[in-house]
Structure formats: C-alpha cells, structure tokens
Length: 364
Image 1 (cartoon, rainbow, N blue to C red):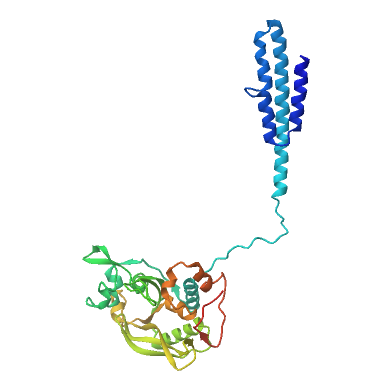
Image 2 (image 1 turned 90 degrees about the vertical axis):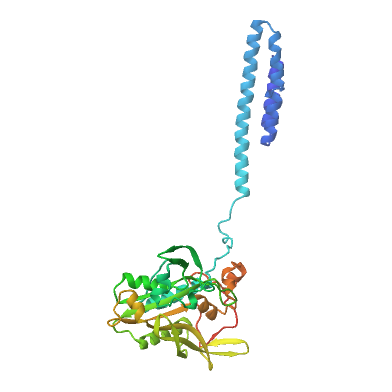
C-alpha cells in the first residue's frame, strides 16, 4: 500500500497548495468525487480476498478521512482569509465626512399654513377642524345662503350621490361649515380659526378645484367691527413681515356677515413687479364682516346677547403673494424642481424687509 501512501501525500500537498475555494473544490472532486482517484481505486476492493479486502478497506477509509479532514481545515482557512480580505477591501474610513444626502423641502403652502396658524395662535385663536364631506345645512343653510344662491348651483359645487332629509351631500365649498359645527357644540365665547381644504368647480392659473382656506370666528358679547379691523391689520403686517401695511375695508356682501367688507392692502404695480406695503395701488386679500344674526340663530345663539366677527382667507393666495408664485396649478404637480426652488428647509424663517417684492421665487 505504499502507492496509496504516496498518493495521499500528493493529494494532501495539493490541498495545502490550493489558494482559492474553487481550487480546493477541484482537488476534492479529483480525489473523492464519483470519478475521483480514491473512488476509482476503492473499486478494486471487490477483486481482493476477504482478509486482504478488510485491511485494504481500512487503509482506504483512513486516507479518505484524512483527505476530508484536510479539505475541511483548508476550507475554513480560505473562507476566513476571504472574509478578512473583503473587510479590508470594504472598510469605511469613519474620519471622512458623511456622504451628502438630498434634503427634503417643506411645501410653500404648508409653510404658509404654519405661519398663519402661529400668528392667530398668538392672538388667542384655537384651531378647529371638520369633515370635508358636508350636508347642505352646515355648508349653506346655516350660513344664511338662500336656496336660489348661485353658489349652490352645479357649476360651483361638487354634489355627491346620496341624500339626507332630501338634501344632497357635497364636498365643502368653504371651511365656514366648521364654524357652524363649533358654535353648535360650544357655548360662547368662541375664538377659533379653521384651516383646511375646500372644493369648487374652477381651474385656471389662480383657481383650482381643490384649494385651501383659513377662516376665523369670534363670538362673544363685546367684539365689534373695530376689533375685526385691528385683528386683520395686525395679521397682514405680521404675515408679510412689514412694519406698516396700508389697509382699507370696502363694503361688500356675504350672506353670512352683516355688515360685510373686503380688505385691501396697499401695493405698487410698476414694471411688472408687485410690491406690498408701498405705492398707491390696492390689492384685495380677504373677505370679512360681523356674523349675521341668522347664522347665530341657526346655531341656537341669541343674537340679542352675542355678536362677533368672521373672516376668510385663501391660504394658496397668501402663499402666492408672499413667495412670488405665479401659477396656482404648480402647487399640485409634484415637480421636485419647483419644490426645490420654492420650498423651505425645516425651521427656516423667511427674511424681513421694508417692502416685500413679488417678482422672483423664494430660493432656499
């Protein structure tokens, strides 16, 4: 069996010399595979005498076991070496600065939302919320809107399938419906603002079928028109970050307020540039007025005891004015280039100035 010893020595040397797992597997197959050298030699056992076969079989098994053990040991060595090499190759230098990541942006509409809520919050207003799907009573009837009012027509209002008490459900055309729900549940005094989505059949550069409003409501025993004018004047100065903004209140009509007014702010329009807070021109910005007695009655509040004011502002319009956004439709198109140009990083605070120019974008 000296030939078998020599073969074992040669195969052990090949195992030791294997430099990769692929080389090692090749030695294993050539030695112990179905057609390997050791396997082929073991086939000769059948031609041997019983005593000789027993001794030879033991030696063949000893060789197989020695080769298998050597292969397993070498395999572990090569696998460990491969892992170490990979770790060295893929090592991260923790002293290097982190890879830059794209920073998200706050949509200018929600930046405006936060600013408006913060300003009125400092005045003592609380945020109220309500459903987007409303009934006719809360959206129209309780707000003193006649049955034949144009706002009820199909061209302005989205009506839904299904009725309640003979009235169709709608998606709210104004957040004023939440004012009604608040007055139904809360005994005066009431001081709330209602930001949220509203829906109307309209679509162009300054109108969208879905847009955003914030409405305010105060109901108590003493609030009057002077308080309304002071509150809104302070709001526009704070929102546009100006020390002084010329304002005027023009008589107007809304079914749910009496008297009603539209608020204008001073501006200039020269050379294609709109600038707020300076000039001799005017820009309408919101509607307001004293709460109509019929609205109070619809909420079971005695108008002989309580009074108050209400106002409504388009959040989208405010964002367009403050941040020089020319087209409302871009608010909803999810263009990341637009968001990068007009958006805000977290905790960013707009700069202040003596006049607010509306010509360029707000790069941040």
